[in-house]
Length: 211
Image 1 (spheres, rainbow, N blue to C red):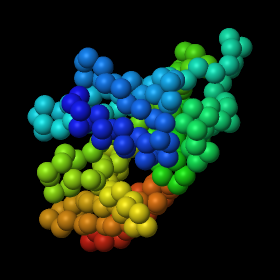
Image 2: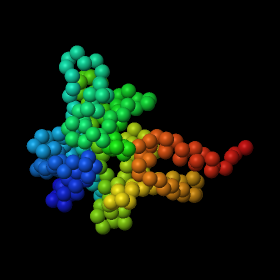
Image 3: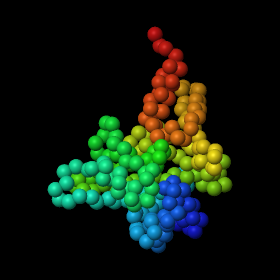
Image 4: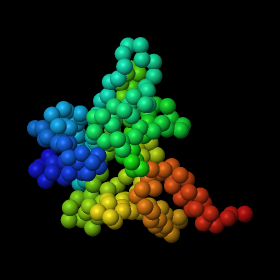
């Protein structure tokens, strides 16, 4: 990581979690430690796509709660833990409707990542936050790609909030030879499953019937 990358990642995490005490400290290899104050809370790992010449990152944080008698992850305790570690009451852990092996993490109404539960140890969980930012100098500088790792059909390009101006997202999909582009407020990502479902229903209604 070069100095500019570290500065951008540092600023991004400070802004995302609303915490000026977050620090990104680079290591010798293509990775970095993430601190809140003097406490290390996790790390950043580089994920470089050689074919597309793109660099993205994944924030990884291991959480261990409970003791040997712990039988299942406790959402309330995990929620309180992340609030405390990031010093932000707007951080939320939300159960997933159809999946019991993970939960979703939000800051306020914005979906930011997934909390995976260790199948072999109920005390352990892993918070993963993908950071995919477009390079400077490209037409999409300052925007983010947001997606669900377990739902590859949902991928949107979003601008960030700037002062009073809210962020917006673009979703693109082809229907045969027609390209649909849909725009919606970034805040709607708080209920991204409903957004994805409504988009699917809208596209289905636009397809010509075959009878």
